[in-house]
Image (cartoon, rainbow, N blue to C red):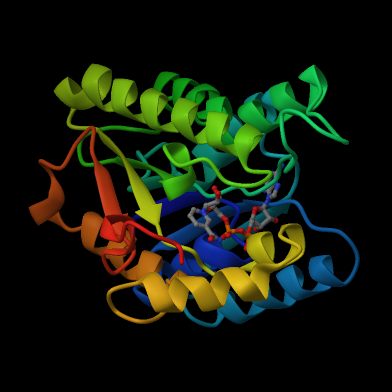
Length: 261
Ligand SMILES: NC(=O)c1ccc[n+]([C@@H]2O[C@H](COP(=O)([O-])OP(=O)(O)OC[C@H]3O[C@@H](n4cnc5c(N)ncnc54)[C@H](O)[C@@H]3O)[C@@H](O)[C@H]2O)c1
């Protein structure tokens, strides 16, 4: 397999599992992550491990991929890696934002809101603009974002991320609508509650969330990053060429269950 994929948030969680799955399938990997300390070492070890899976065709960059200057700086490097060939996939799976309420003891500030909406939402657009202008998206390329049920449900502390998810969905839809004529599709995967680092680090009572989700989910378990990786893999198949501007639910039907209790 000579095709390349670009994954933002490649080191853990949904992005990490997808990176592994696609490397196993022989795709060349270009991944961005933003990790410090022990987590940085884990990411480096993960990168080395992957090189054993696909003849070393793995490039990890520990950079803030939401920084517009980083996007512009790396486009020539990505071009060099792929030999100018369009990417099969651009996956936006970044988790970094402010989790706090709009009112109360720590009301969200404009700076926190702008940062969260950009990093987890609008940054997908600026990457796609750069990639498309650089000829790195073409017929058969997929753009995918990761959304959650928090896009339409209100949850404690999730307000800023919810705004980002609404932006992400709207932007992805519009990308698919504008670029569909080039054979490029854009969709969001809506994952169910998944015990990744983002959940266990950010949410104080995450164990309770997991337990409630297991009760609520029709299939009796939380979503696993591998579930998302499998769906991304499916969406890369030629049979998925006509899925565009859509939300692809990957949650065992969780979003159809009315109550958390
Ligand atoms: N965990 C859930 O329950 C859940 C459910 C639905 C959707 N999602 C969404 O899935 C996506 C991934 O979340 P996750 O749960 O896999 O999180 P995670 O914490 O496991 O992984 C986040 C990844 O993003 C990277 N990252 C963070 N900031 C970055 C930056 N500025 N530049 C580059 N990389 C950066 C990290 O290095 C890591 O690789 C997010 O958009 C999240 O909202 C998560």
